[in-house]
Amino acid sequence: MPIKLNGATSGSVELDVPDVVGSDASLTLPTTNNSTILAADPTKLSVDSSGRLLTPARPSFLARGTVGSINAPTASTAGILSSLFTDVSTDNHGLHNIGGHYNTSNGVFTCPLIGLYFCQGHVRWETNAFTQNSYIRTYIQLYGSSHTVGNSLVLHQIQGSNESSTAYMDQNVAGVLYCQAGDTLHLAGGLHNSYAKLHSGESSFGVTFLG
Image (cartoon, rainbow, N blue to C red):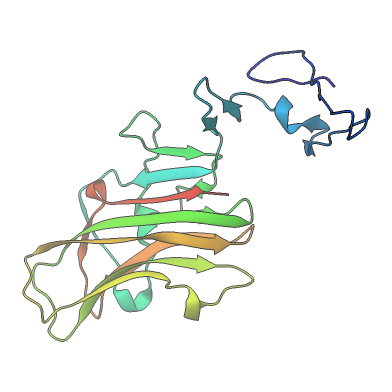
């Protein structure tokens, strides 16, 4: 059986079957584009000399903003904060957009496959003075045919204004979501009934497909 592993162009697989089992044996491997998975491009799938599986083509992105403080939408309008995160330069602090599934024009990530996705968002807020009896929040929204707005705030952080706080604060959300192909994810949030400034250069949003 021809194979290709770690860049090799030819080879064979020999199955040593005990006599008590029989002399004939067959092995069926999953295929993609009429090629076995062992024939995958090593730039997409390979095993290193230590036995570690390498998947450099795994869908993933990490984006951040490129400017200083920006007035963000109020929390009640569910503004898409990630639309401010347009920098995915691969030579800038590990930022990346493998597969191009993150749209830098609107801050939305579209899930290319069904499965588990690790999602994280970090926002640095500048609030100056909180509105009494109000709140500020940051959350990741999930939209798709099997999801509704009511259950889209799974990854969510909220802080009330009655707590003592400085003019600057960080909020972080992270977790694993099970998504369908075509579902979309974006980072949202804001200050309820008022406006807060988001320091986009010190904020980020990222998603990685786990499998």
